[in-house]
Length: 346
Image (cartoon, rainbow, N blue to C red; front, side):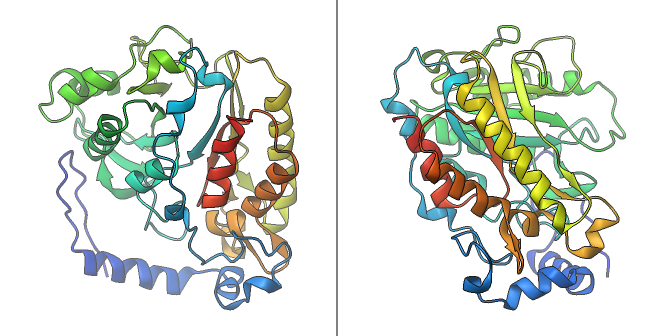
């Protein structure tokens, strides 16, 4: 069965929901690895650790967190680099294939829960930006992202959102550069232009702003090539990033956790002007995918393997003081987001 989707910049949904759901279900049934299938029927209490994130196919429960205005209580002179920011990796990858899926709630729900760092991945296709995770089109587009972010900021003007904007997959059928298309969204598109001109923080080289400078704004981190500066560039000297994402198998989760924990420790004691990023997310290399090493099993664990989310929740509970920087998670739980928000006030 083939479902053909044409990515466009409008908010039109081009696949019938029932057809797309059937396609995803059939794909999952045919390709779902054995450890993931086992996790679906395992009693959560039987998983070592047994925390709120255990069980690969259980929902995150993120909608139970409610922190829509948490930045309002912080002083204006607080630097964004000084904060602990709940974040989502591949923010828009909800209801994707088992190999690409990284979230189970939509962007507005994430923002209301308290997420303030997002990871937006845009393919440059036919002079617009459909949202992708690798080669997979996520049935949404940059216009949707802009509308949802700016709607939230208009309702909650004390908040700011840090957005890593990344060029994803292979550009095709374009008549202009990625930078030119981004400028079209900012200056010319009647739907996104007024919103972005109002809500984009005006970049100042690689400097991250204070919260007072950025309230009501989107702070872009550039993950694309451009002559113009739209925000701090991903991976420059002012950033410290942990993003080891390719594992050799489900047993490699231990190594990933060692890297996550070390980054937590560095952020807690590091220079206040350095913007720390810690990815809890990972997946298997191509060979490991057949063993069940996919984002959901790495995040939530399977019988015999404690997932990264449970480990992170336990670590943060045991170490309640200290900045974390931006924590980019697959399927973050309400408990994880609440704990990260609370650290900013201790």
